[in-house]
Picture 1 (tube, rainbow, N blue to C red):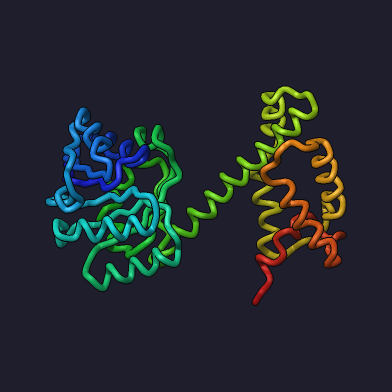
Picture 2: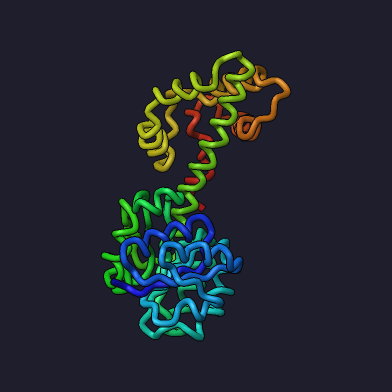
Amino acid sequence: MASIAFLGTGLLGAAFAEAAAKRGDTVSAWNRTPDKALALEQFGVKAAPTPADAVRAATRVHLVLKDDAVVDDVIAAARAGLAADAVLIDHTTTSPVRTAERAARLAAQGIHYLHCPVFMGPPAARNAQGSMMVAGPRVLFERVQAELAVMTTRLQYMGERADLAAANKLFGNAMIIGVSALMADILTLAQASGVDPQDAVKLIGLLDLNAMVGGRGGNMAKGNFAASFELAMARKDVRLMLETAGDRPLAALPAIASRMDQLIAQGQGAQDVSVLGIDAVRKP
């Protein structure tokens, strides 16, 4: 089995390291809070005092860190122990621009780097579920493809463009955060209307959200705003929602109403509600 290292053992990194050790890999780990790495010793993970110590003899080094600045700092700290043929597998959610810069900088230094953000939480990481995207040189991806495949249900190679997985991770997280905000507002409307929140959730479950993304989202991406649900009518409905919520806090609907008002003032009221995305698809 492989000798690998995990730099960053928060909730997700710890779950990855635990799963790797249970698969039989030789695993070392480092975390800025030493107790978090030491807690993994019960699974056979060796806690290391520094990033450089953690990566010695590792053929793969997995980074599961907070942000771009921490990624750069930890890679710099690990350099002294990094084997020449080791591949850095960066699962951190990072800026597309800084990811591209990092990949180019590391390539110029002869360091092998792939950006591999994931859509999974700790339970999924322990059970090799969820999705992992990979961006970077195909030759590196093919070298580690089999090892990455055992970490996830869906492994998607995005191509050699270094920032592409980073951008797609932001798309996915925007959807997760947006849905969470709208669900919060729906539950606020349910509270204001005297409806059991579980019943409200069941109602949303009747909607085919995948079809909405593919249909209305696809039309938005094409710039097709032919009306099936006019923006002006949708704005009326949002007014009713705001009135129903009263003075209760809302996460998303007030901002949506404000954007609708801007577009209606620009003469877009008779277009489909998907015209909310008009500026995103206008050619510069």
